Amino acid sequence: MGVGKTHLSQALGHQACRAGYNVLFIKASRLLSDLGGGRADDSWDKRLQYYLKPNLLILDDFAMKEFTKTQAEDLYELIDRRYHSSSLIVTANRVPKDWYPLFPNPVIAESALDRLVSCAHVITLTGKSYRAFLRPTQPLDKEVVTV
Image (cartoon, rainbow, N blue to C red; front, side, top):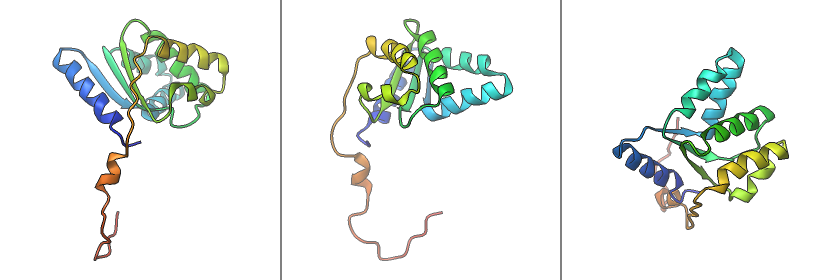
């Protein structure tokens, strides 16, 4: 956590933009929330198409928590439709083998993650959190109120 996954994915996305590719960066939770809203207002197909369109989709903070049945199905559909047709970068705080239990249906987990991981280049970043270096080392003299 805090070792630069998001920064690296954004840099790769920036480079892809400079090379003329269409790129979309989004937090995985936001994407799943948006697709869930599409199920509620019957715009799911249109919303999914929005995420299928870019040459590169960057899903940040993937697998932060367990997926609902609907979220797992949405992820499967997204991954399956992008598989071998466009690029996907996923950042996560967990290693891929730890993603499987987050899916409520093991068949969907295997199908989605097999497609995602089978042709992936896994980059593991290690080290101390960069955010730890930003924390004050000395006690503050004044009371600070955060709003």
